[in-house]
Each structure stands twice: as C-alpha cells, then as structure tokens.
View 1: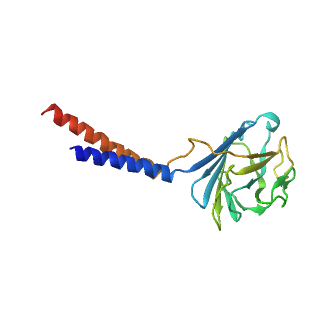
View 2: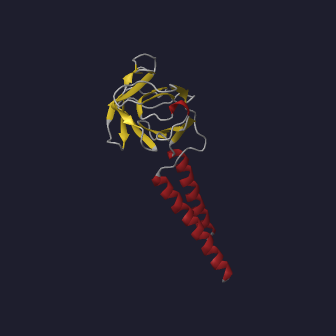
View 3: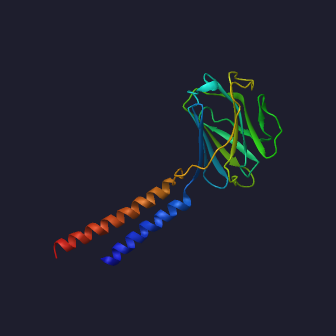
Length: 206
C-alpha cells in the first residue's frame, strides 16, 4: 500500500513538473483603463489581448478605434496578426515603429501592425493571435515593448490622447498551464487521494 501511495504522489509531482514546463509565459501592464496582456504560448505563437478597450480612461476616454500597434523585443519579425473575433482579419507585420500617424517604417527592431479599416473598440476584449512565419519568439529580458495608437476615425490613424510606448513586464504568477496539463494534474491528485482513502479504510478495518 505504501508503494501505491508513493507511486501516486510521484505521479502527481510529475504532473506538477509538467505543468511548470508547459505553462504559457505572461507579460502584463495596465494604462488608462486598458490592460495589455502578451502571452507566449509557444516558440511561434503569441496572444495579445487588450482588456477594457470599450472603457478607456484618461485622454483615451471615448476613443472609438484601435488604429495600429507595434512591438519591439519579440525576437521574430516575419509575423502575422489575426484578430480573434470581430471578423478575424489578418495583417502582416511591417518593419518599423509607430508614430502619431500610424506605422512609419522607422525604429530599429520594431514591427508594426496596421488594420484597414481600423479595429472598433466596442468590446471588452480586443484579442490578436500573433504567428511567427519564420524564426521564433525570444522576448527581451525587459519584456516586449508596446506602442499603441487609439483614434476616432475608422479609416485614418489620427492619434487621440497618449501614444503609449512602454515595456510590458513579466507577470509573476501569470504562467497559465495548458488544458491538457490541468487534466493530467487532476488525474495525478485523484490517484494520490484514492490511495490515501484506501489506506485509511484498510487501517480502520485492521
């Protein structure tokens, strides 16, 4: 029985270890009502989420559209950004950063994404799937640097309010185990619990 308990506990520990290995890496910051989250799911896939796009504050308050956004420090430059929901439009990254008029082709290490028409900021979450078409994501030690432009035009990248330009730091505790890993963890803990209950039952009737 002790061997069964030990084996079950070892299985649970193995699954916990797998959880740490397979967890997605999360970077996050908040500014003027928007929470920007960059989640590295794999070497070739990243999710970029903007929570609160329809409830912006400060000098972004009332902005109706996301005009463009750019990143530096991703470690990959040949990228495609696909909006999740909202029509699922895709755009390819162009080299360079972002200024008050949109993607400008300047700025070493930056890649810029400019949707046409602009993305309506009428939802609590704007989410984009970033795929590396070649190379791999390898974030800078300070985290990815984000620039973002909000506008009130559906077609023109005319900046409204602050032109956000900041590093998005690593979020401790933001590592999210994948669904398959959660399933393995549950099975492992179930085995351990079952073994303990069985041992108690045997001892009670000894």
